[in-house]
Length: 316
Image 1: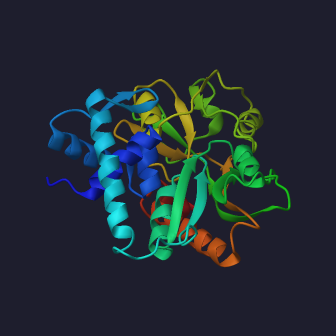
Image 2 (image 1 turned 180 degrees about the horizontal axis):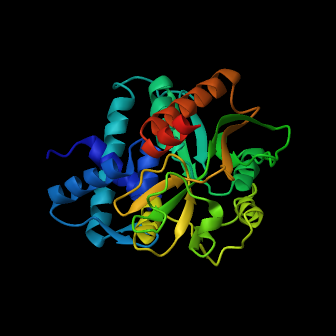
């Protein structure tokens, strides 16, 4: 493999994000594609550049030296590409920056990729913010311009008049089970049948979760036997489910790994709405429309790849 500038930019993105998956989202790549690219880069250098840990990745001493040189190369190339000799420096606001964030949603990579294609002059600053209530706060303090957030039926996301929102999709929540689970052959699963299972549940998102989960369990006549609070990489979660450590409510678009099956919940007791939120003063209507279109197109692509969702939709 010949080392290219895009490889250096990928290294910088991973180092800045502290995570391969977050860097992938920021660059509009899939996590597997970014991981494959990193392995090829490390093979080129003949030595590991990052150490993996429970939080993500951190640079090795050799990786830190490579990164320092990579940043220097990229800075020099940007200076060369920026303007010909003798040309005046461009105005500081020649390229507009959009500060974009997302809660735990698979929509983000496709949104970023489409936005870069449709708005090539737009510079993106992408961040991950778990709680939708935190996203609203950042927007209202003018620390973000737009974001993908979440809320639930009957619990519309709260915000001031400074912020606008528009729904992307309201989707049913499914359940992920170990492939050896006693209910694995069911086409759909009754929530009450999982009363004795341990659950992996993400923490308070400031929009109604996990309250809506516990309320659904109560309506089904039980309280979960055990709840493990978990907020981390989806792949790590799936590996724990595959190992039989518990089950979890998951997004309808989740791609299960080997050892995991995804099933609809009978009667669809849980729904989640993803929505685009933005600052009225920071995002023109035309750009908001572009963002919404890119987000919905990203979701449609994900759904087209989710066989369990397609089966559920056909039954409906």
